[in-house]
Length: 267
Length: 280
Image (cartoon, rainbow over the protein chains, first blue to last red):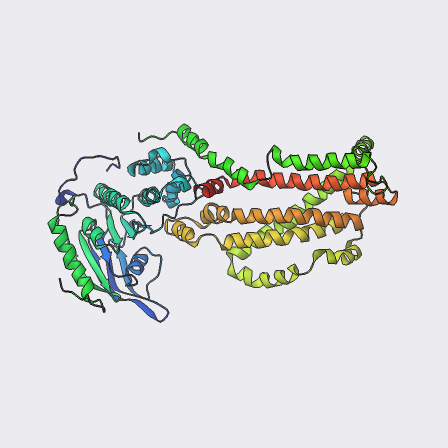
């Protein structure tokens, strides 16, 4: 598997290398913060290598779900299993903020992603390779502060990918970016996912982004799964195509249906 | 294109170094323009003394001070006293600063350690340490221990407080990131917490240096048999005002040197912070 950037069109869906990913299974997952119940029993199975988008209104518990999967929080009840439970099931998180260390060079920041393997002799080479994959190889020695918001997130992506994770959890990583940078980053995300074959769990509030990237969209409402929609559209997906619009309309309608303040007009 | 050689990395380091200079100017105080005012004051002082506007009984002329410096240098008295004072200051800084740094780290990192010691330390902090001089003289006489104790106590608190504050205010998001990316405890400390706390620790060091000189002057003036403060007190006995003024000027110079040393350390260890400020 190579990280080298290529402009060749990605192969058809069935031919993706999915062995690099790991499956994810949630059983009866519950989480409360104080008196507030965030997740009230979530059951889910994600096959290895699938790209799943989790959408929902703010405060619905989608970020909590991701933080539980990434072991940033511990569940009150229920079980989280990565793969068959044995072997190396490495998960990495890409946060909403870049969270780069301002006192480390960009390359050293990426090496942070290697965790315990940072002292391996090939650590530097791997970091350089990951940086190249996000198109910033020429910025290796600079401080993170000189980068733009989009570039910082690209470094954060490289840091998340440098250890070749089998599951990548993305917590609204593109939320703070401008529209054009977002589209570029979505393309980059799709490309590295196709190349590396990890399982992706993307939390987003942007239905359009979910449809552009995911194999499957989950809607969380009131701390439970409310919708589980497969997205069977060929890649790369063309922005503004009718298929995408129809699906987006369907999901948005479902989202708005539960809105207490219903729109004054019917579509 | 995939290979980034270390040479290239170095070049980039040099490229980013540019904002550092801007920062230096922004901080002010440095550069030749900062010396214009002191030079002017010195010239004015000399003129006032030469014309008799300034009585020689109240204030010696700069030239007399220079002569006094030369005289005391030839006799070896000046070097000896400056050396003694400098060593006392550094010993106090190392002992008090070291303990303050260690306790600051401990109380910043461990809630248990904080609960055990912090409120006691905060109570002690409110005692002006110079008020202990009578007690210290009884305990230690006028030996080195007395000065060491007072200086160490003086520098302890700014370093303790700022180290603890720095450790406690390290961005929790960075800590969470490093933890989830598999950093060990020691890596977490050396790569995240210590660098994150460093700007605050340097603030503490700067405060401590000011208190260090102040404490030493007072202690040496009251209870010493050597050192700059002692030299000045002796000179007062014999109405050698030129030596008194010389001692004061040397204190100013020592303070300035300590300040420059901190600045150099900051530039060495907070390179990234400079770029951070300029990039904002």
